[in-house]
Image: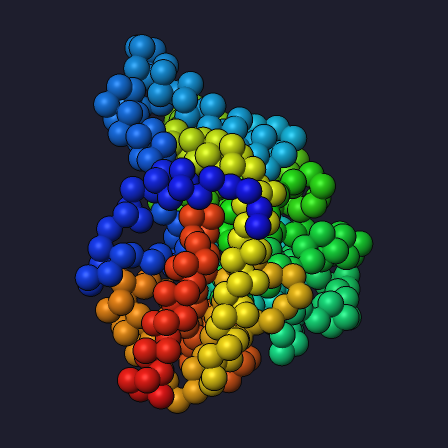
Length: 407
Ligand code: PMP
């Protein structure tokens, strides 16, 4: 068992220490959002108590302090994903916002009728709908990489799809519904061979996997801090400098301009060109505390520990008769989607909640993926660094109770 101080980690997350429906809370909905350590909560409160001011324009003490903290977060995140430049880190409102930025700004400018955009069967709706909107407007064609029954991409089929018509590939790094880790480095390399640009949806990857955007050589990488022990309402779009420079602004307003007249407006430089309006300053400032927290524990130690939980839970859940795991890829993070014979996922969710256990049920914003498996939805337990095998034992006992009541 990997060495992490679980007592300390548990006590870092104040929300975990509470009774829900008469039972100690077991929080297994981490793929939806992770809980926040006390350090992040204190960074948020501390910002509002001692620093709050609008950034970049002010010359007074607080404005300068707020600006410095905001820009320190940019450099911290640059370092976290190993971007070449801080200007390649664009603050967004989350993964969804980052993908829409690319589809709207890059897509509307550089894609044309008949161009092909490749996504995969296991995309979250936020990596499907923005591309469909673009296709509708520009007459591009959306192509879908199929998967096998284990929930792995069929790479042969992907390679067959690639041609000089392929202009963009947008693929999820880690599936939120199945836990599958996709071979994104290979996907990116193959796309580049035909001259296509690539976006990676990293929403589920950043808390589990070390991210090096230069090693991956992706053109864009989008993620959300709320899935990385950080605040809600903020995320990051990484993009290669030259590509971002070639793209027009996505939203117009303050901050993103150089000079405005009624005749003509010139735009600010990176990254501000893409950060119109007052950003989510407090959450951006606190984001670096979340990243410090993760890196202090060590990404490798976190991944090892989560794998231990995944193995333990896979074995324990598989021992329940009539329970079937959906998503059995060889490369997986700590997400388990499952079905139980004759029991609707919604009933499982409600009955577990009565026992203080929080899981996710439904289609997980991946309806086409559910169609692929011929199911309306699943129950999903997803584990974070603060979860324990004892909690998994509670889940198993809870599921046995559900089975007794409804099976
Ligand atoms: N992609 C994946 C794989 C996700 O899991 C999520 C969040 N569930 C998103 C994109 C969207 O992230 P957000 O809601 O933070 O914009």
